[in-house]
Image (cartoon, rainbow, N blue to C red; front, top):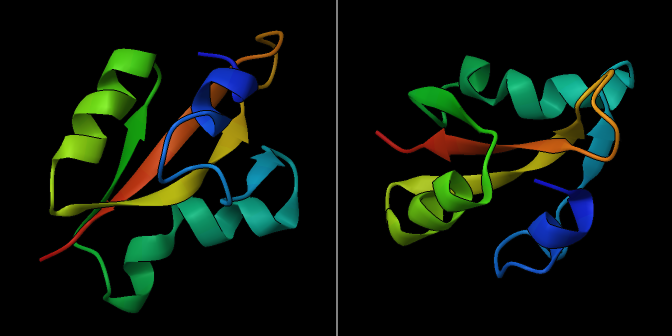
Length: 81
């Protein structure tokens, strides 16, 4: 999915999209380490993200630009306990 596709979805419009090498990317990928979330889930496709937005236990966290894949992003959700 592209960054513009992701940012058009409710829940992701105001969330950060970082490059994978950006130090701030760890705030998304390691969001479970502080105990707020059981898991962090990756979604590579628009369908996966849309399904995730329907799940009340999944909280949108942001996205990372996929290195080496032109214009593509990976969305992340934190799963609440």
